[in-house]
Length: 117
Length: 119
Image 1 (tube, rainbow over the protein chains, first blue to last red):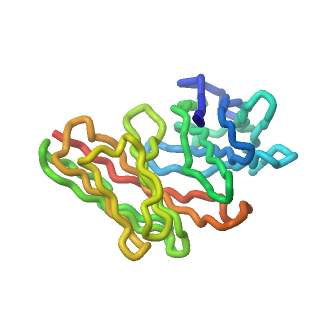
Image 2 (cartoon, one colour; image 1 turned 90 degrees about the vertical axis):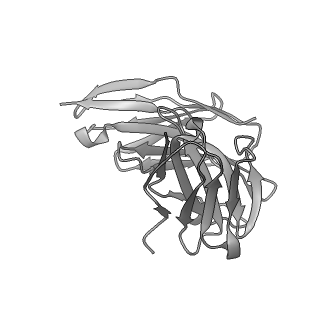
């Protein structure tokens, strides 16, 4: 069965500093995608970054980078130069792609990030 | 296209009443997903459609829940005889799924959700 584990219920970071949010995953499918989403208090899910299981390089999107360690089955999100607007819930998610069919997205329980001024 | 729309944004209902939510996906997307998110938790998968066919249902989708996607466009999620445990945010998402995986078609777009409160 596929599973996403986020072990940090809450994290604090000082404004302008970098922070790493942990995510480990479990799947037996060889082809999968890993996602990070941000959910502010308003509720919408905002896509941040994607990493495919066969991608050789770590994904980066502006201040977001994904530290993908396939052997350890981890996909940590690194946010550089934190801003007050980064305060939100962050969810790691995964889908699988096997046999020509894409599965659905499964989520971890999330990490609440608070950025301190 | 303005993205995925969900209606209503908020719904308060009395226990035992039926409620129906609507989701309008991005028009060119062929997949539509429903998720439920309770306070402090991540979204949990309920069901998804590819075009008009309902391809998978979670065990979370009890007999009181039914989802439809007539003509492969908008979708409705109905909850019959609501219970207090049904109180949650119901999220809809859509995606474009093809034969191969590419940057263009890996993305899921979420709506803003419908927050249901059963009193």
